[in-house]
Structures are given as C-alpha cells and as structure tokens.
Image 1 (cartoon, one colour):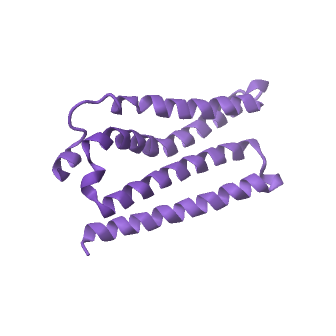
Image 2 (cartoon, rainbow, N blue to C red):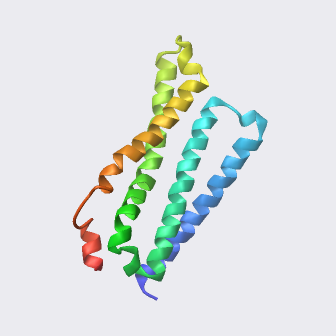
Image 3 (cartoon, rainbow, N blue to C red):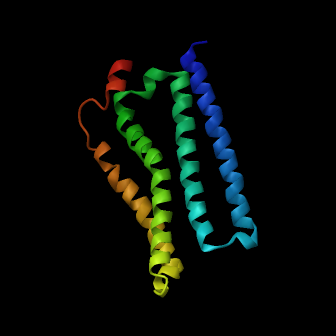
Length: 153
C-alpha cells in the first residue's frame, strides 16, 4: 500500500468518527427536553454543517481511494468543486453566525427582537444562503479548475 492510500483511509476513519459523534450529540439535543434552548439551536446548526461536510468528505475520499481519475473528470469537476467549497466554508460560517447572534443578543439586550426565534431562523437561513451564493462562482468557472487537477490528469 502506498502512503497516499493509508492517509486516505485514516482520513475516512476520522470523518466517520466525527460523523457518528455529531449525530449522537444532535440526537441528545433533540430528544432531551432540558436541552431545548435557543443556543442549542445554533449548536444543531453547527452539527448539521459538520454532518454535511463529513458526508461529503467521506464520499470524496472514498471516490479518490477507488478511482482517482474519475474523481477529476471534466463533467464532475464543477459540481464537486461547488460541493467542496460549501463543505469547507459551512463550519466556519456556522460559528460566525452563532457569534453574530451572541453579539447582537448581548449588545442589544433591551431589544426584544434579538430574543425571538424569528431572529434565530434569520441568522441560520442567512448563513446557508450566503454559503450557496458565495460558492456560485465555482459553477460558472471555465477552464482548468485547479493546479491539482491538472497534475492528476
């Protein structure tokens, strides 16, 4: 076995472990009544972005393990690159969303709007919408996608 394949297998194991732990944590928040709090909604959002990123990277690394050439085929490059970008920026954006919520909640504590579920839904929805919009340039990109793909061809 090559060192590259050992690294791919180790990365898969780490992502599967992260996926399982995040799912267990999400289930605990969902089904234990005392954890139903506004801040835990953001924790569930962070868990959902970790789950989506882990699923993407498990699929991506498994495809790279079995057949690296088909992973970087010209037809699938744009969609994979778009999904890769969403998976990469999702987790930091969810932490930024929670930070903005806490900042507004603390600074504007006298405003009742920042204590509502509507504000929480607006924060989380704006995070997901901004992820999809900021990743759109990868769909409309023409020419070679990256130097790594050129090397693998």
